Length: 214
Image 1 (cartoon, rainbow, N blue to C red):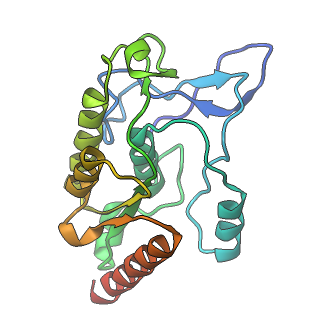
Image 2 (image 1 turned 90 degrees about the vertical axis):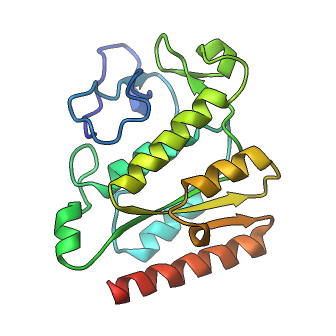
């Protein structure tokens, strides 16, 4: 799964933006022989990923700096959550699954979205575009399938998956996230900020219990 970002010599600067890997690696989480993530030159991206850490204030500060914008491509969130949870490059702060299991621990991730898949990586260059221009037809069917495939692979590797659907009334994406979760009890729907806070309190309690019992 882990491959380093690559860049191309160009007059414009690299701001940390990268494309998806090409097909057939869109749903790959464990194939280190696949192509690298290609760097995008001259684009301004969102906030960089924060490596796993135990400094709560740094995490809160980063969250407060975030702002929602743009379209939705759920597979990116899943792929980079997996990158974050494994010790190989490009993110290296996590423990290996075997080492964590030896301590009686487990890995867990929370997949939250406030929308359904609305874009896809273009088949020609992996840059993001609407479904039709990206070469995937006119709806989210194929990209939802990639999302579902990633979910199954993440769970198969032993990671506990929590899903949270926030402020969305869409039966299709609700079903997708419910099936993505490790079990019914780890799938949540929140319609407003108060419900979202309650959901994350429940998840936090569940993770604490998981740590104590494992």
